[in-house]
Length: 360
Image (cartoon, rainbow, N blue to C red; front, side, top):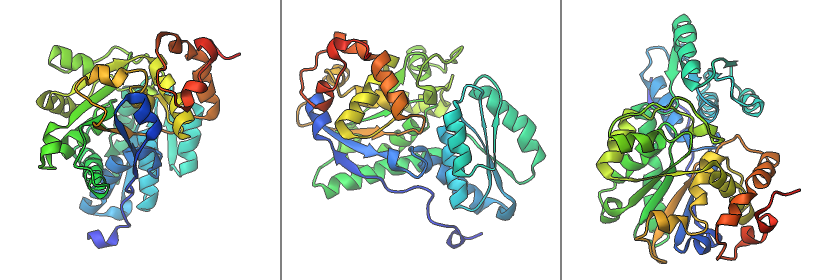
């Protein structure tokens, strides 16, 4: 099957914009890579789309291919969206903890079937491989993060950023910020930086963020080997991999990245402040990337930054968010504003809960 017979890529080039509000809040130049605008609503369209495309190109009979993806939600949505673009069916298996909203979005996106089973992603993945794939000779397994083709797809994000910065007459980025679940995005970012072969990409710092209760990479870096968490205890369920990919740990060690862990409260705060400052809704797995822009967090983690430093934040997106949920976050986690200093007057400073109290 030749490449000419395939439709266009199941992902798109997304904008890179400089945010005045977040730059003022962070004390350096903040550029937002808007991966929330991908067809599936998250960066996963790149990696999952690349894997599906590669699978069709290399299958002996692409007309019988049926994709099977295990996911907490966003990877499955990327799989269904890409499969629809490539005119193939996709079944998604999600754990019982997946919210009805995400299940409805998967079905609405055109999933052939959505199966809920198991208390976590690992259990759902086991069911998929042992019960579904074995009964379909055209079945193609689509993991959510741990596959070379997925990393290759995510690496296209960096080449886009490099070109977009050049188009804006900027020499390059001083740092890139991304969140980590299973480590697929991190692998893509680090591989993409390796392939730029320019001075800025070698010096570019990478800040990898996780929430408490899902910090498998952070603990693995501390111990120098893969660590499996006993469970996931965070509202950022999209980061809910109890163990990162080995490749993610290897690349993180090689590049000496900065790894940090934020609380659920900080991730939630990042969501509602970003909505007020940039009118964009994202889920907590993305909110942690934006939370570092507020109240001096970014410079605490990367003290070498100056007001002229350029920081690219991957707005990874995510579909498990609504206005109702966002308001609940503002109500439940408004107290975090008590312990921070809002020294930069941006829209979200004025819209913060009064005195850091719960909204009534």
